[in-house]
Length: 225
Image 1: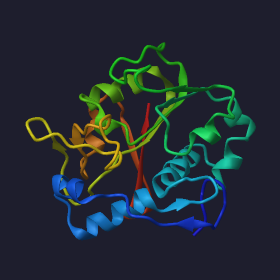
Image 2: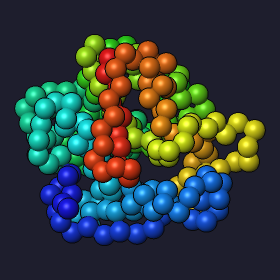
Image 3: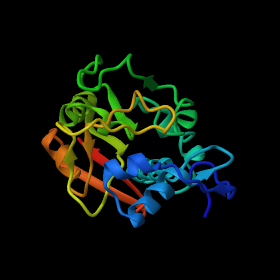
């Protein structure tokens, strides 16, 4: 396997889940294994993990491009895009930042439930493993819909347990993502399952695409306005 972002074959795996989170998430051993692969298999050259690669390829598919993400962002029609990146979308910021119309907004300078940007401003909105930390994720996606131009794409990833339904953590003990040592800013409101696509439609989009780079480890969603 090569990195779909930079083309390197220099990849390394590491476990990222810790027992406390495994217990809170109530996930089986095989689920631990594919989430560790999703988050922990990474390129030693550009530091993209499998999650970021899935997101990168899903974006390239939107524009009919086959190749590496580092080359995709240099294409003339891509250089003309207006792109909103909400928080840092994994490792993709280093590539997207070379596009003149790229705007990066990072919490707390952006509230995804009330994006302070004009309607129909962007061709592409990108975020990665952010939605599960938003208190009202449908509202967050509806704001993405609002700032997109007609025909625009909202490409994103979420940590998804593919064999269960979405669970809201209201009323449950607090659970955090991030890392075992530094997790205070990563409170989880939603544990996503296979019905995650419903939030896209409920937010106002009429089309939701699910792109699978590697099942069950690496899925990305594309909402089409």
